Length: 61
Length: 246
Image (cartoon, rainbow over all chains, first blue to last red; front, side, top):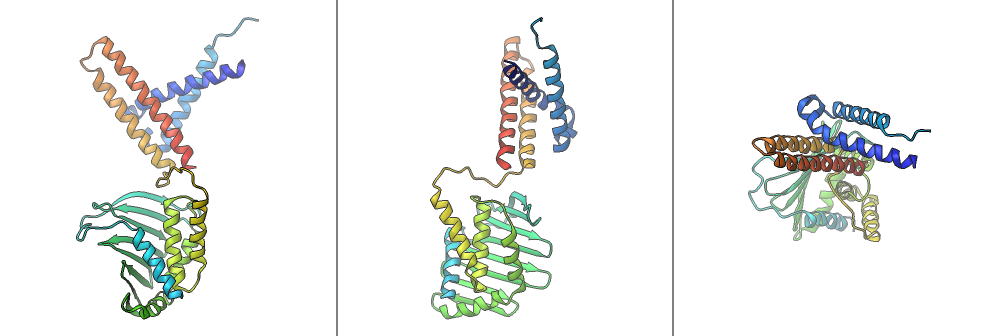
């Protein structure tokens, strides 16, 4: 069950990253450079995953 | 026998080359692919003329090898700082131009093939090209690999070594034994993938902005859905592209 939740969280993070990246590429043209762009991508992915992971509803013990 | 094989190898190269209308290619060819060989650091460029003919160049420190098609002739030029050899071949003749002069062998004068081979064999540039082509490693089942193997085989035949031809035959046999649908391309590098991805992503965002102008709430919703699909599609394509490149 926990593996499924993590998988879902990763998928959601990828979705958010994919939708955000075009905006980033237009807003910050330096991100069109591969190194900078990949850093942006990794950052957005990590941030989104962390946020989703933290706010994900948990059962009370 | 070796002369005959040299002629056969060059004829195969000519036959496999696309036909070119005479006079075409006056405009500068466009570079359609550029790759760096990880093993040698040699830079390979594939260019395409307006007529659609492909040219191939491999450049390493101190050595440049170019192969191009002009009016039905395959022209191979190997150049170093001190030497240059040119091999021109079409369906009926082979011409070699080197330091020792110019020799043209035709169907009417096949005996000149020996002299043509000798010119190539005497060229330090040709020997250096054979060494370089033997080291480059673009992987099996790629168009670049077959072009490199065929060029090496042609030069080695002229040098009296059959190893190149055997290598080419082995590669072709391996292809024949594995009749599978193989996705081929110009070995897109991860950088190529990234450039295509950014282009598509930026276009998707620009069109999304245009779509939002003067549209109703429901149309905005449609614009958003389309944008999401394009953005996700672009990233999925990039991930696959990078995976294929490795």
